[in-house]
Image (cartoon, rainbow, N blue to C red):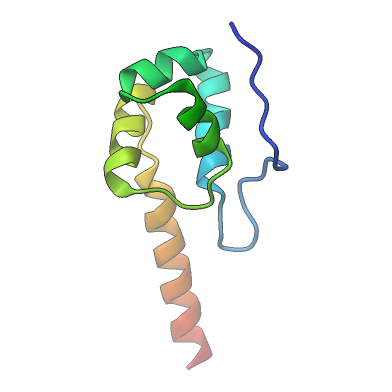
Length: 93
């Protein structure tokens, strides 16, 4: 398998925020799937997959393709963030 690296520090959570590119990168490593394989499954170039790893946000259609390719529902992270922010907003009132 090819060696994968990203420019940013990998992190999953910072308060109620998360870095979607890091989550995708970590899942790819965990599943031992190559960047080339993911690129082929989501119909893009390898270079674009590396760019995805550095993204803080992502298009929902692209995230759906990635979720299906990696058999992981990445949308749950957004749902959990929404719930946490909504809860915090109610508390502050």
